[in-house]
Image 1: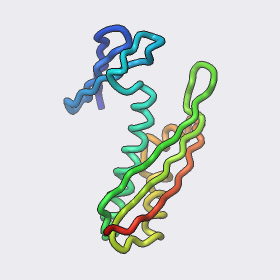
Image 2: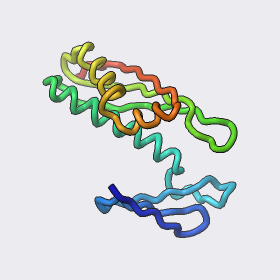
Image 3: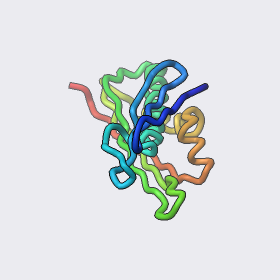
Image 4: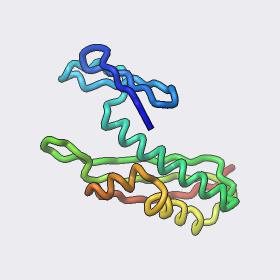
Length: 140
């Protein structure tokens, strides 16, 4: 896997993935940022959420669950001193579908956390306390 991050001005960078996708990242105003994109640590948090949500939806589809929507709300705490690493992340999954079996949703979240989501497992091994929850909603 490869990526390229290029400084454009002040605290603005353009990150390009090896697969050719680009995103603007920006720092906070106190270091010259202009709010042109997410902060780098926000990208880490969003990446963890996306990694795990992909796992959860794929696992549920393989279990033949009728998923119509899925999202994960993340809340993180960071250390107060430098380096301001994540110390805690809570991931709350909201899964919507028809006749979803709670045991399948619970297991999908567990499998992502324990086996498949390389991003969250990497952070957890680095000392970040990661917790998970889920809510099931019946599709209309």
